[in-house]
Amino acid sequence: MTNRPLGNERLLNRLQALTQDDRLHPCLLFEGPVGVGKATAAVWLACLANCEAEGAPCGACWSCRQIPNGQHPDVILVTVDPKKTAPIISVAQARSLQQQLMVKPFHARKRFVIIDPADAMTAEAANALLKTFEDPPSQTHFILVTGAPASLLLTVRSRSQRVRFAPVDTATMVPWLQQRGIEQPERVARAAEGCPGRALSLDTSGIDAWRASRDDLVEALSGGVASRLNYAETLARGDRAKWAPRVNEAVDALSMMLSDTLSVLDGGSIRYNDDRRDVIELWTQMLGRAGVSRAVVAVGEARERLERFVNGRLVMDALIANVHAQMHDADLDAV
Ligand SMILES: [Zn+2]
Image (cartoon, protein in one colour):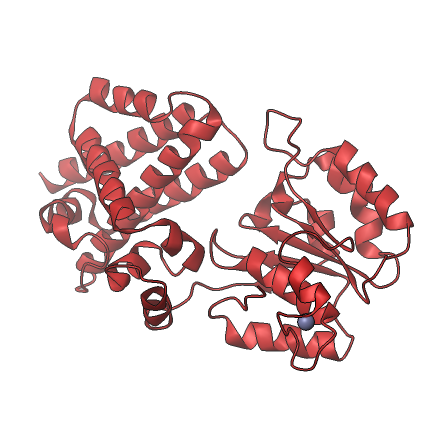
C-alpha cells in the first residue's frame, strides 16, 4: 500500500510536481523530527516516480506493490549495518552500494537509494559516497533521511537539496488518529508533538508509561545528589537498545515540562502536563525565564550528544545536574 504522508501538503505537492517534470534533485535531504513521515515520504516518492498507472501512485501496479514491501530491485534501502554493534552505516555498506549502482536499473524508470538514518553514515562511508551523491548514475536519485541534519558532514549537506518536514498540526492529526481507532486522539496528538509515527506508537497505555517516566524525572530533580545520580544510572542501565528509548523519553518529558513552564511564564496555558499543574507552577518560580532558556539549551545539547552515541548515563547525569543547578540558582536569586 502506498501511503501519502500526513500533513506537509505544500512540500509534497512540490516534490510531486518536480517528479512529474523530471526535475527532481539527484540528492535530496529529508530532515525533520523522528516519526514526522520522512521515511514514508521517501517510499511514496519512489512509488510516484515509478507508478505505471494514471493518478500515480496508484497503489495497485507492480511498482506500487513492490516498493513499500522493500521488494523492488531498484529501490534500495540502506540502513544501519546489522553486523556492527554500534548503530552505523559502514564504509563496507557504502562500497557494496556503489557496486550495485554500477549495474543498470532492472525495471525502474527511476532508481532510488534511501539512506535512513543518513546521520548514521560514518565519515568514511559518507566520503566514499560523496562523488556519487554529486553525480549519481543516470536515472538514480538519493534520498538521505535524517532527524539530525547537523550530524551530517558539511560536504554531504552541500551536495544535497534540503527538504524540511514540519510537525503536523493537531487539527490534521486528530481525525487521522480517529480513523485508526486510537483512543483519546487529542491527547495522543499533543503528546506526539505533531509526529504521526510517534502518535501511532503511543497508544493510551503508552501515555501512562510516559507519565510515569516524567514523574520519575520530576522526583529526581527535587531530590538530593544521590537520588539524581541513582536516577541517571537506573535510566541508562543495560545495552543501548534498552536504555536509548528510556533516555529519549525522559529528555522528551523534560522538554515538554520546560515548554509548559515557559508558556505559563508568558501567560499562556499548559499544553502537555495539565495533570501536573502544581509542578509547572513550582518550576516557573524556581527557574524563571532565564533558567528555562538555559535548561532548553541543555536539553538541545543532550539530544545532540545522544545522536552522537555518547553514553546515556553521562548525558543524563550532565543534563539533570544542569537543570538542578538552574533551579537552585533561581532560588538563590529570589531570596
Ligand atoms: Zn502504481
